[in-house]
Amino acid sequence: MASAIPTAMERPHFIGIGGAGMSGIAKILAQRGAEVAGSDAKESATAEALRALGATVHIGHAAGHLADDATCVVVSSAIRADNPELTRAAELSVPVVHRSDALASLMGGLRAIAVAGTHGKTTTTSMLAVALTELGLDPSYAIGGDLEGPGTNARHGEGDIFVAEADESDRSFQKYDPEVAIVLNVELDHHANYASMDEIYDSFEIFVGKVRPGGTLVISADQPGAVELTRRVRDLSSLNVVTYGESETADVRVHKVTPRGLTSEVTVLLNGKFLTFTVSVPGRHYAHNAVAALAAGVALGIPAHNLASALGKYTGVKRRLQLKGEAKGVQVIDSYAHHPTEMTADLEAMRGAAADARLLVVFQPHLFSRTQELGKEMGQALALADLSVVLDIYPAREDPVPGVTSELIIDAARAAGATVTAVHDKETVPDVVAGMAAPGDLVLTMGAGDVTDLGPAILARLSN
Image (cartoon, rainbow, N blue to C red; front, side, top):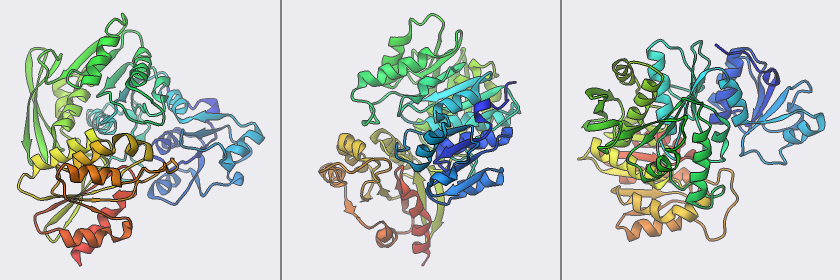
């Protein structure tokens, strides 16, 4: 098995080392014996987890953080060109490596599964990581979210399988050459980088075209964008295409999904035989993620019944309908959903899991560009909730866009019949929610920004 450290990665410095994608690569390198260093904007549990592995983590960005003997500087697309550590790297002639290139180098020589799609990547990658570990295959993996706690988004294993979340947002997934590629869905998102669906399709075609000769594409037979992508790549002679879904034409057909509270029972038809297993998270879309994981494992030669049983051991990943706790009869659940399709899927999942409960949503829009393009659809999704609180836009890496505010979402939600409260001061949200919630209600904090921090605060306020 190839697990040596590439020479350029012997003493890497990560700018933004606490990020989900960056910290995973840093963790694997540290576990392989590299002298890892880096910086991040603020202290975090992830930074502490990296220090526990021997990494040097600085808080704040400064030229002096970059050691003179660093062999490379690793960056993501979110790092701005005027970052002082990046400027210092240029002065020292230290090579700058994009996160995707670093991850590609770690996958070299291994049987890689790359999980792509507009939604569901983290969950599906996590399901595979858990199942393969449960089967004793000791995989390496890099995920865009934590499984059980800080620092559990990545691991160096001694097995020959590497499972990686493949990010389409900046086209970086085009760097990988997996043995198996999963495409869960194809939709327009990341509007700062893609101007049209044609650009999205072109990008995914390049990703699929990088699958190793004789490798497999596992792709949805139901989602329209995935169906169109399948049509575009069917003629790649070296590619095995395996479709999954509820369509009668699917190679791995989802026969039935039965809700069981906060779990689901899934029955699939595979190679002429029915196979039933449990998915320990609610919702049809999570069931489909599990079936995609099953199909990918089978493509690597893992017996389907073994893999199905192991998939039942997956109990969720942080921020993907994660139960944060209960106070005064009110359950608080956290969701990473930030695109209208994800929002609708998670809200429908919670409706199915607790049909008699009132559903209160605290939603924080993510990115000005996404809100500008999809604000109306976000508002329509919120109509699935009984009550919604909408926060100001979380900018992440973007600068404000004139005229683009949360009001775009709020207006659309109200037009769709939703009851919405606008809250501009995030610190007041626990009081607002406490004034709305009653025993038996479900509160869902939703978004890709720091809205996740509100869960514990809401629980504490409810307790008081």
